[in-house]
Length: 78
Image (cartoon, rainbow, N blue to C red; front, side):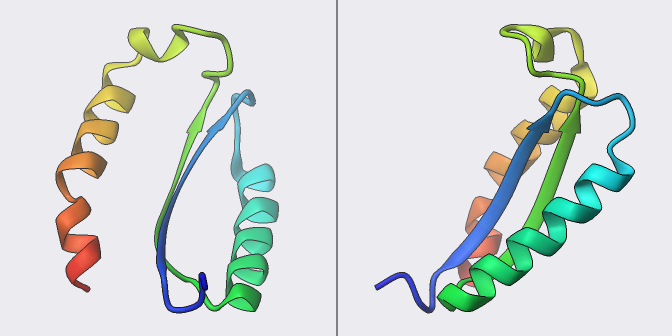
């Protein structure tokens, strides 16, 4: 039922440096969703925002989240 669907991954992370952790997650997401027949359109990782309200102080994250939302139609049409 999920096969053939598309996914956009948005992942908040508590770490300052997300290089290693995001590599592990990217591999996990690719393997998992590939097994399910889901095509990953894009992945986004946001570091150091695990506390409630922490993202409100990070304008670049808010801008990126807004852009993700406004571009959803492009991902659907791909």
